[in-house]
Length: 385
Image (cartoon, one colour):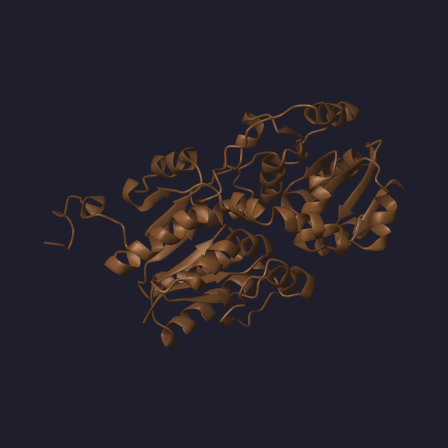
C-alpha cells in the first residue's frame, strides 16, 4: 500500500503542485503515485507544462469521456473508483475546484481519507460550478490545506472541524520564486508574431474563460467592449471555448488586439511580467499578477480571492452590469501600475509545509484528522447505542 495517490487534471493544478510533486518524488519517507484525470487532454494544455517546469509525468492516466460536464465527472468518479480497487493508498489527494475533484466521491465510496489542497476558498456565487465542487470536496475531506487564515475561517463557519484544516500559504508563490530566472526565457518560446506585435511597446494581457462570462452573451459582449476600449495593444491568448463563442455570437475585436491560441506557462508569465496590466477572469492569474506586482482588472461578479482588492493590486469589472465609463476602468488600472503592494499569499515555503505534514501524517497513519468530538451527537433516537 502506498501512502498517497495525487489526482490532478488541469493546467493550473500541474503548475501549482509541481514543486509538491517533485518534493514527494524525491522523498524517501513517503510513497506516492501521480495520477492524471484526463480533464485537459490536448498537447498545449497538458504536456507542455510538464516539460517546461520539468515536472515528473503521471504514473497513471485515466481514459475519460469529456463530452460535457456530466460525462466528465461521471467518468472521473468511475475511473477513480476502479483505480482504487487495484491500487491501495492510505489517502488520496486533490487540488482545486474543477471537475477532477469530484473524483473524491469515488474515494469516499472506498472510505479512504481525502486530502484537499486549496481548501475553503469561497466566492459565494452559486452560479459557479467551481463553488459547488469546492464545497463538496471540503465537506468530504479528512485533511484540508487552506492558503490563508481567512479561508480557514470560512471553512469553520460552515462547521468544518478546526482539527482538519491547516493553513499553509499558497504554493504558487513557491513556483514564481523558484522559476524566476526561467520565466525570463519565456520570450524564446513566444511566436514571432507576438514579438513583432508587441515590439517592446506597452501592452495589456487578457485572459477570459469562465463559463458565467463566455456563455452569457450580454456579459461576454461587455467584456469584448472593455477589451476594445483599450488604447494600448492587447495580447489575448484565447481558449478554444472562448474562440467558439466569439465566432458564434459574431463579436469582433479591434485591430489593436492580437488573438493567439493558448500558450505555455513560461511564455504566459513572461507576457504577464512585462505587461502594463492584465484583464482576466482567472483566479490564478490575478494571484500570479499580484505576486509579480502587475495590476489586474478582474472581470468577475464575485471572487474567491478578495485579497487582491484588499491589497490594492486589482480593480473590479462586473460583466453582469453595464459599465458606462470603460476608459475610466483602464485609467484606474494604469494608476495601479504606479503603486506598490505586498502580496498576502505566503513566503514561498508552502510546498514544503504541505509535504512535511503529509510525511508526518503518513508516519503516524493519521490522514483522517477528524476527532471523535466532531461527531458527538444525541444517540438516543438513533440506531447507535
